[in-house]
Image (cartoon, rainbow, N blue to C red; front, side, top):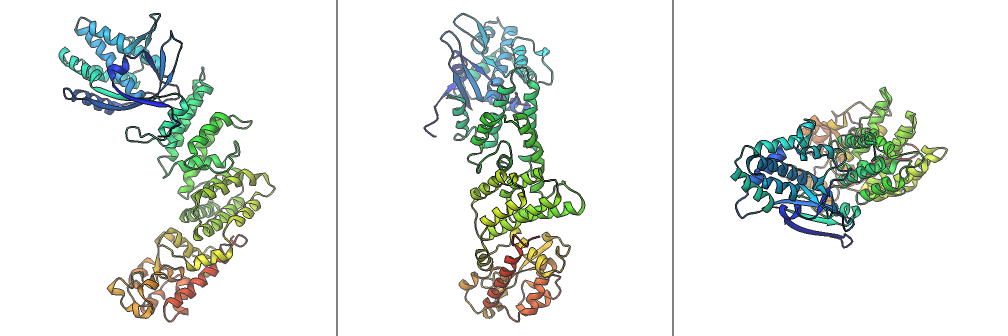
Length: 577
């Protein structure tokens, strides 16, 4: 744990924790009490099954200690753990009523004075626990003996009634045992921090109950804290709006896509206002977001509500990107847009979604959006094929384009010039296409498919077939030196296993083939394979059949160079239309 964290941690039983001279408070940015019957049942079962002289560890709570004047009670702000502290308090409240009804009341009064309330130096009495302003009235009504005044849908009331049913079904002796187990055998680790910043930073380095909070969890805490401070007072409606909108974002993003932090990073970098200079990484996401909502909002154009509202709308578009299914246009225009989105997904271009979000916001014209998607396709193909995998540099490029390009007279031209400047040049791209290994994956299928459509087919868009249903065919089998059924290939290739392994996954040894033909051709020598190729509709495969009488390392090299030259012409910033 970093030395910059001012924290202390100690384990204690509930007796010790609840009898300290301080009060627990739940900040308004925390979520409402949300435990349900499954958690109540588990807690009750844990309590009833503790063996004599044994202990049961409940986990940890994280608090910020607020020192008050010498004659005032210190406050422990519950940053994490309010669900358990609230549940324990409700159970103690039920036990208090049980004792007052079934005994002389002395134990009931003791529970009330020692665990449910705290008295200061002036003998003024305060609740041991205070919830957020949004549900504290309900909690205090239950604490003061009027639970029926609380809405029956309240989780607080339902928890109280659950424990009431369990406790009042027991005799005094049993409740005596359970009370002692609860206070003396159940333990918590209390982690005390000196500030909100220390508490939130703690989440980045500690595992809490085995589940480390993600940056998205931390962002929610920070957002609701700021919302509470900005719109606290009497403006609960605005606070609730922000909280609900954040939940909508989570529904749209967290539950729909992998790596949901990408959306938040791309959203923040894509915005015109406030403008994020440079990249936002997964490591800096939380800190950047916290600084943005605390120090940069509101601006002249955007307040916190507008920023979160924009996030909801944008999240729906972002999910559309991941599924290559957006509905910004209709008919043929929409089909072309989604085809470009699918291409970008196949070549693993998630980083470019930062700029994609911005162009869908800035441009109303289909032609402008399609032009930028085409430019991104060229750039990302050159970037990926050339082996440039540094995500932070891509983030910086797209973030800077969002900051600069749309203030120019021709944003599309500005984007084209910047991407062409950053992309690998023709010589590097050509060499990589000719000499790299290509896996049998979506990116390789995209490369072959695009070469087929844009070079071999006369119509610009090519024939209408689903790329997902097409196979990548290795002309010389990958397992030529490892599988007995391919033994006839070994003499034909004219090289040893080690040298062949350098060529077997080159682009020149790959072609497209219909699934039904690939199944028939895969085990055959080259001459028999050509009989199957003759039945194929793919022109690149016909070319292999027509131009090559044999298939050796020399042919693989020759065709690799040929396809690489075609690729340089296709993925050109000036020609790719």
